[in-house]
Image 1 (tube, rainbow, N blue to C red):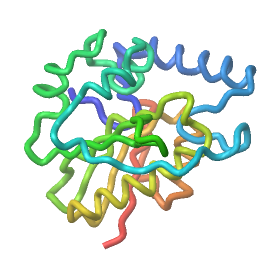
Image 2: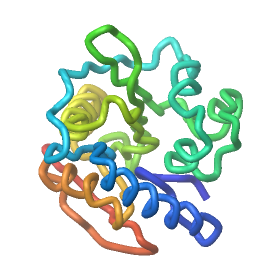
Image 3: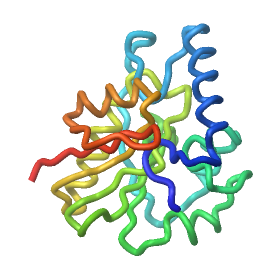
Length: 196
């Protein structure tokens, strides 16, 4: 199985659901933002920009996913510590995969996502979404808009994604960005945004 969406979930990753719920409770109790967008708790971050991951470089992603919990939320099937060779050969290995970094005003990478070919080249599937904690709080809406523009630039007329049902901030961001929920299964919502 390959991970998809904000966090892949199967029978072996139930512990990640419990951890995520606990982490959310702790984060909310401290008043810190939640992923990917919790504008009620913190003012929006400064504008983020997009940088294509070309030439292919996973060193910034390794820096972003140094914590085992962060890596597990993005891809619970990936080994910890982050292994660039594993990601190159197993998770971002298709010729048509496109990956991107979110960068802040200083040019520092603060987030990541990939767009994999979905059902045909005109559909892209948004996967491996991550924004570092310091950049959260408004970043979700920017990420959704930048991901859509990147998919358009790749010739897509639609983007699909999967998101955990208990990740309410992400669900709100995607719904606000115009994503339609197609169905629910195994604790995940499948969503799609068409514009073509």
